[in-house]
Length: 207
Picture (tube, helix red, strand yellow):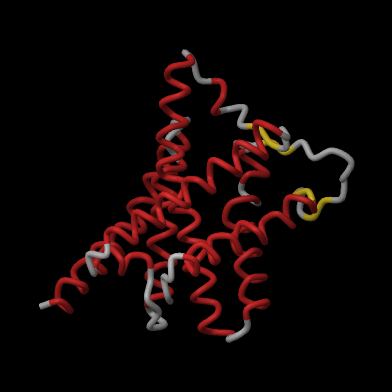
């Protein structure tokens, strides 16, 4: 019975992947501030199922196996990570900004949009971890897997931003760029992959 239930949830999650990604694209072209939200869940489910295909235990398995406490512990720590990253990088150091997002008025609407965005933020970290787990199961090497996960994440999230410019970087003193992405920003992506991995390990969530 458990296997049937797991299979049903997995099948539903696979169906949701293209639905959520297409929905994100529609919202983006409609200039909706919420386009990012279905995208992060779609890519999480994508890499969760890819990782699962290699017989890894995944984040979705926490929900399937009703390990809700561990899932919400993970979710909470990943939200704290999101707040730290945005608070430090965007607000304190002003290394990047969101001109399209921050143009929404009135202020109350902007605050609600940001709160909703933070609620979806953990799923992008989950996708990074599952991407890494899948690559590790293939290459059996931490450094190679982290490097490839970093490059793949940059391809998915940063390179399209070269055209859409939903976020703009303002990195002082460092002008070197690769495919129009500042080398400092590329370096920080390693930490965006690494830190969620260590949070999973801290919570003893095994792949």
